[in-house]
Image (cartoon, rainbow, N blue to C red; front, side):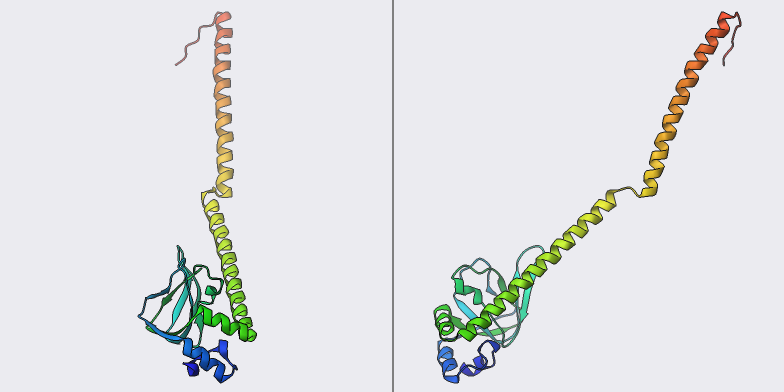
Length: 201
């Protein structure tokens, strides 16, 4: 197992005897394709170093947010260091095998090798930045879709002008009709006063 750990970037350059001691604490675990390795919200107690296969680290939901795709030599599960439930899910994209290191052993290893702890911190910062960028992009898309919906329900400018002209025309016709009705009655009354009979129709 120690030979495998030397090929992992996280442990690169560390003394062989130290890796041998850590390798003796690690266990082999295999998962079939589409198997859930880590489920969001569940308690996690291990660091996983990928020996074979690929996994997808993601946030479940609609839509699903993929944080990373990892392969041999990569690792995941470092969030277990805070001893809280997992904040993301991990699923095997193909048959996969892992070297699984218990949290207590990994913590002791980090205390002895602060350079490895810095690597883990850098990885966590990168994941946080990627998540922030994804959130920013999603917010921009949401605003864009909202603007498109708003534009879709708005009448075009030419239609606005036409509707305004139509309202003015209708108003003018109503005023004209009222004037005709009023003045026709007045004219008839004047003619009748003068003794002139008027035939309408």
